[in-house]
Length: 274
Ligand SMILES: C[S@@+](CC[C@H](N)C(=O)[O-])C[C@H]1O[C@@H](n2cnc3c(N)ncnc32)[C@H](O)[C@@H]1O
Image (cartoon, rainbow, N blue to C red; front, side, top):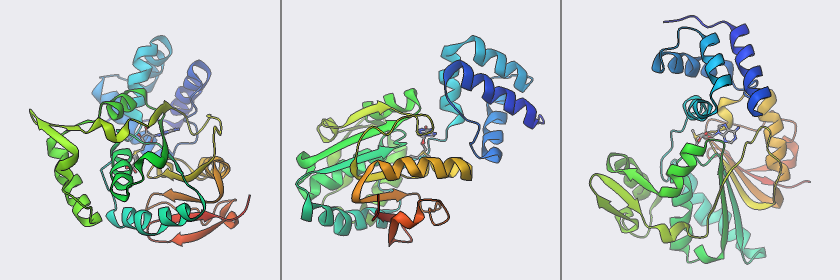
């Protein structure tokens, strides 16, 4: 296994920043290093320098690099009790004051989270009253999300999660199985707007009732988490809800006092101050 020096990583992130505008400088260093090592092996580069040169010279390869450097692991109804709280508490609360629910999935990966939301809303009878925007930094994964086609072997865990979520049907009502693939019912996401958006350099583009940014900031260092959390705060209406991953927290960050905890285990927060 190759050794990676921090100076080489710095050089790599500088080249990416000046050539493509993406800023990976504040990604958590240990997981970033692990991903770089994986890429070196996968593409048989003999040094970070060689990788840096290829990235600089080859924009198409850079897109592949983005897909490899980001972690895309996701599931439908991941953490089923989170989805139960959303259905039984958070969304009914929003509907007390708003006719429509606006939702931003920030870091939606291959879209399983978005399909989960659409199924939840459909079962509540309010899918037509929702405005959903799903974003990710990774073009390739967004294309996969848009296609709504998943390997059948992945549907097993999704089905288990759905049962624990206590959905109204069976998950297979929402997809068709063909040749080992699950083709999701596209009518679920016909109103979803899929967009490329970088949480690090991207603008605050709208206000929402719910922002889900789950298992994304875990790959950022604390400074970057702090900056991104400010953007997420700005993207919420007052009394809107922020959901982050179960292993993440906002307790220590600058804007912590602008939220109250709705559910500590599932990391659901409510914005109480501008
Ligand atoms: C582990 S997945 C989380 C998927 C889903 N939210 C979940 O919890 O199952 C993390 C996603 O964050 C995206 N991501 C990483 N850095 C990002 C950035 N700067 N802006 C937007 N998305 C980013 C990755 O491309 C990846 O799809």
